[in-house]
Amino acid sequence: MSFDLEEKRLKEEIKKRKPKIVFLQLPEGLKPEAPRLAAVVEEAGALPIVSSDPCYGACDIAVSEAKILGADLIIHYGHTPMTMNTDVPTVYVEVRAKISIKEAVANALPYLESWSKIGLVTTIQHVHQLDEAKNLLEASGKTVLVGDAGRVKYSGQVLGCDFSNAQSVSESVEAFLFVGGGRFHAMGVALATEKPTIIADPYEKIAYPIQDQVRRVIMQRWGNISEAKEAKSFGILISLKSGQIRLREAINIKKKLEHGGLTATLLALREVTPSALMQFPGIDAFVNTACPRLSLDDAPIFRKPLLSLNETLVMLGEMKWEDLLRRGWFGNAT
Ligand code: SF4
Image (cartoon, rainbow, N blue to C red; front, side, top):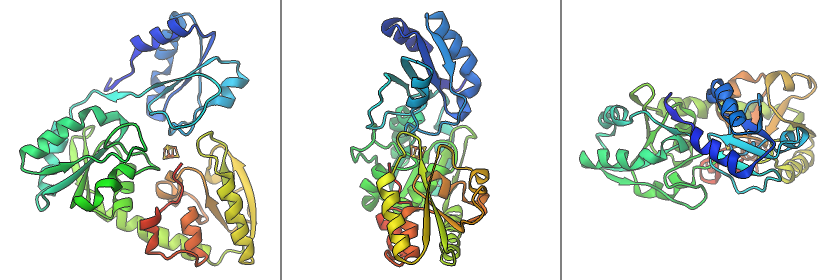
């Protein structure tokens, strides 16, 4: 197993808090571990129930579901707490990666050759390895900056909807190195900072630049905005996930669309999927007030334009396309 699931702490928390029913939430990649973790909970004296719904972030603490089931403790794996009250006591297990980052960072060095000042960013799974990455970069003559804007728990940590740590050092660096798997977070760093961004992927032990994909996404976003300009009827998506609810913003954008002579319907849902949106054939385009991942990663799977709040302002002529980067591309920070 390449991740630390802190089974010992899990057992101690159960013994200390003495819950009757524990609701376990795991991100998608860790769901296969659920039966094993449930057994640990049971051994410690509580009844485990595993949430089988998707869970992509700490914005999605399953409080309502835990209440329905009468659970008196939530164990949430894979994310750091967001500043959000949960009525049901919640224990966060951050899930640190146990694999080496050395080879991936070494492989990133040739891509960083032409820059001397590097910003270093990562996800929660690798924050404990940032010092090591910093040392490796410094050993090859780089000046390394790790940002701390005070909005997320750890220096250098980025979320898919919060790149403040990258932005806080952006003006002082020439490029960013993202340590971690997948492209989504690195793409967000590149979009939020407009700086070349290299991924050092410790799982694949490879490194690669993300700029070509960023360019493709920008083109695709522009295409979405242009297509939405032809739309007459809009659906405004309001997430029902506890940390993603943006009702006020949804109502504001509804008023703006209506002011422009368009129709707009508020649509609340837990999971934004193509099949959920296909139930509304009379709607020409959607505004996403939920997780920005939908517009960045998943947009190609939707048949109709799916705009962020700020992209909708561009479509309405209330924001300049160039300002999207400065003001936050997706306008959906939780
Ligand atoms: S809103 Fe999306 S990007 Fe932000 S924490 Fe939740 S899942 Fe991650």
